[in-house]
Length: 309
Image (spheres, rainbow, N blue to C red):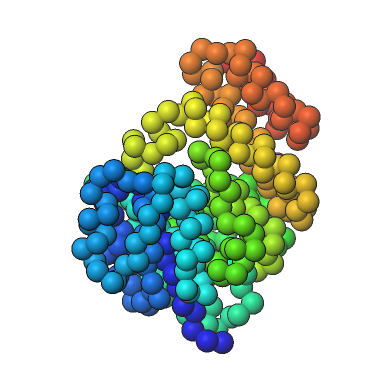
C-alpha cells in the first residue's frame, strides 16, 4: 500500500492568540503532512496575518462566518491528501501524531478510520488527565491492548465508544473519500457536531485503529461554547443528540444502542443543569423522555433523582 498523504485541516475563528502554536505543531511532525489547510471562518482579529507569515507552508482559505463544521468541510473539499486529520486552532499535536497513524495505515489497509488517546490540558499547558483513562470505552481498549501501543476496535465493541467516546476530532484520521461520502460534519449545530459525524462514521465502519498513547492536547478553557453558557450548551447538546437518535434508527445495533445511551446521558446532564438553577419542574421534564426512549431501571433511577432534587 502506498504511504498515506495527510491533509491537516485547522478551522480558525479569531484565533490569533494560539493559531501559531497549532500550525507549528503540525510543521514539527515526524511524518510530514502533505499540506496544512487553515480555514478562516470570518475572523476579525489578526489570524489572517499570522497565517500569512508561514508563506506557502500553509494553505489559507477564508469564508464568511458559518461555523466550525462548515470550515472543516470546506477544508476537506479543498484537500489534496487521501487522508484527513483535523486540529482545532487552540489545540496542538504531539510530534508523532501523524506518524503513529500513517505507519499503521501503510501496513494495514483494512482500517476504516483511526483514533487515539489525548491529554486534557489547562490554558497554561498543565496536564489534567488522559482521555482513555477517564472513559469506560477507553479503559476497555487499554485492557484489551494489555500494554501494547495499539489495538483494533471491532464493530461489536462500538456501543460504549459511541455512548461516551475517548477519541476526539484532533486524534481522528479518516480517508477523504469516506469523509465526503458521509457528507462531512453536519451544519446547523452549536455543539456535538463532532459526535454526530463520529457516530455516522462508526455506522459505516468495521475496524478502527486505536493508538493507546496521547497523540495531542485538548485545551479546556472558559472561552469554549460549552463553558461560556453551560445551560444553553446542554439544551443544544440534547437537540443534536435527538436528531442523531433519529438518524441512528438505520444504523447497526451496537451503534444505535450507543447513540440512544448518549442521548439518555445528555438528557440527564440537562436535567442536572436545570436543577442547579432551581428549575425542578423543567429538570423533570428534561429527563422524562428517557423513560420511554430507553425503559429500564437506569432511566427510572435518573427520573427519581430529579424528583428528589
